Length: 253
Image 1 (cartoon, rainbow, N blue to C red):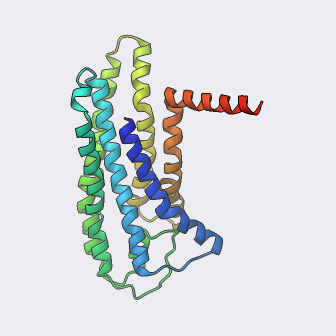
Image 2: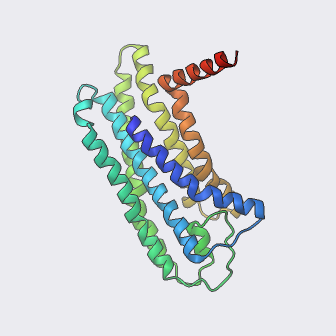
Image 3: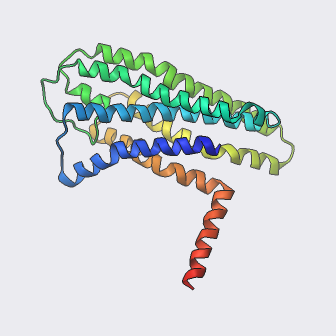
């Protein structure tokens, strides 16, 4: 779990460093100028972090499934080799499946307004200012959404149904509570991340202000909440923080 959490944190750092500095500059200067290549570069790294987060959350749901439903075989199945392969697959998939959008956008013509009504270079605002046909980009969205969002989302739902059924079969209430606590943090992060992304990209005819607000939730708020959620739900991390604070207090006294 900690191995996957480290890569989830690394991905959150990538997402934050891709979006937040430019967003702060735009906010302070009430606007900013970015080249087309710079815009595409930002969008590419944003896509990498988004796809990788989808896949890492899926991998982590499988990890929780094995830990709760097959605890005796967990160590033999989820060994270091499989962990490395799953993480590499997530990162490489993010890098590869982010390229089609960049290729299509680079072939589009932007002959209308050069003002992007957003705080970063996202796909929808870019398509709004394009004069080219958008059918190819829309087709890529549909084709990639199935293996990268729909299948992982269904997989997570299926694994958690199996997890909840396994938890209900535990006889003691303390055992059920302990089993559920191991996956509650991950489930909270999944609900927040998938909920905001689905609302942002699948709900039609959103106002620009609402779209910016929802985009801020999964580009800035979610990376901020992830370490807090996992820290508060983990007794070892919570205990380490308390010990650290007590040592600092004793030194000041």
